[in-house]
Amino acid sequence: MTVQSSFFCGTRSQCAVPGAVSGAKAAWLSAFAVFWFAILALTGGAVAAEQRFALVIGNSGYEKIGRLANPANDADLVAKSLEAVGFEVAVHYDLDEETMGQALDDLADRAPELDVAVLYFAGHGIQKDGENYLIPVDAQLRSPTAIERETVSLRSFMEVMEEVPISLLFLDACRNNPFAEELLTQASSEGRSAGITRGLAPIRTVGDMLVTFATLPNSVAKDGSGQNSPFAKSLARHMKTPDAEVSVLMKRVTRDVMAETDGDQRPQQLSQMQTEFYFERTAASAPVKDDLQTLLAVYPGSVTVGEEVSVLADVPRKCLPNFFNISPSSKVTPIPAQFFKTVELGGGQVRYEISPGSRYGLIVQDQDEKGANRIGFFCSLGTALSDDMKREVLRRINGQLASNELSGTIGSAPEAVAYHFAEFKIN
Image (tube, rainbow, N blue to C red; front, side):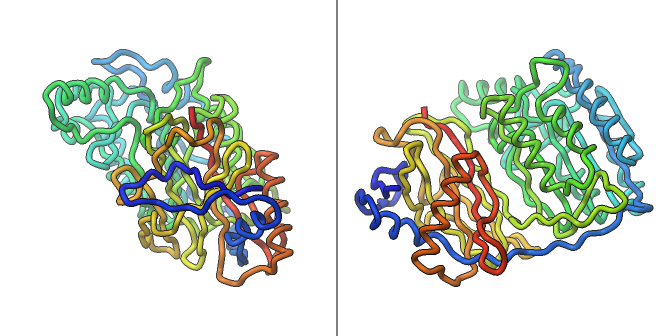
């Protein structure tokens, strides 16, 4: 493995990375990023007598922009799968602004008595000034100012579901959106900013809440070439798998969606959950542990020279991540810690983020290697490995990455090293 000076860190402040080094010395230099990781244990719980309720919405028939092929099919498929794993389900199709508000009110009435709540929404969504909105079928959205009046904010649903001990939100709502395109075109022609970005915006979760976007923030999901979206098909299939903890289950969904879309669409999960949740359990099952309590998103999934790459990682507070990029030919370049903005999320989590407009940006340069690159980190609690162990861990992690195992642990407690990577393509 080599350390390469060329990296897409064209920054608003100059980024300096050492020149190329090869052989054993390169292995030594690269190994600085490997550290101890203490495995976090989760507490399992029985699902007996849980009060489970799911609100499922499929908005296909949009009055202004025409019909989406699959949201109604997706809602039907997901609703049936949720019923099969013990949920009481309220499924709705083609909700207008009034009936979507009524569905939200009904959920609020039920929330105090629930143990687990699920929201699944398929249809159009939009973001404005960093806030996400779900679009009813009667919305006209002739101007950006109409968004707050004619839609229902995702935040409204989240505030209701925060009252439930465990809440899961699945948003298959990032499809190619004529509403957003029209408003962006209109704003551009008038020489002003609409405050609108394609796809949905990153959010902050509270408590034992999991929010899953069908694709990465600011990206577009696929409606699917068959009767269902790639995300809905995989979610419905995997939730019926016995003894799959939800964070593990969603990794399987991510794998399926990326495989079906040739890597163009990657679901993203945002969570601070400390309680394990299983859609389906067998009677004699033992708790399943997910040792890697981190989330990582790199977007967009495909970039060209001059475009910026965004990185978002949520890690335990005691984790000291060291970030770097691995090129298609396995050249390794560190990403300096000062590039990242850090935010305390609560619940023992810290967010590390580089986004467009940051003081430092990750901008693709002409010399950057084309093809599938991977950005990731090793996770540390501060105790260094011996030199021999560093080299061995790096060798094993490279083997895992070669097998497309983008996250996991190397070794066993207390000498386990956690790693997490996400892939993007330079065209």
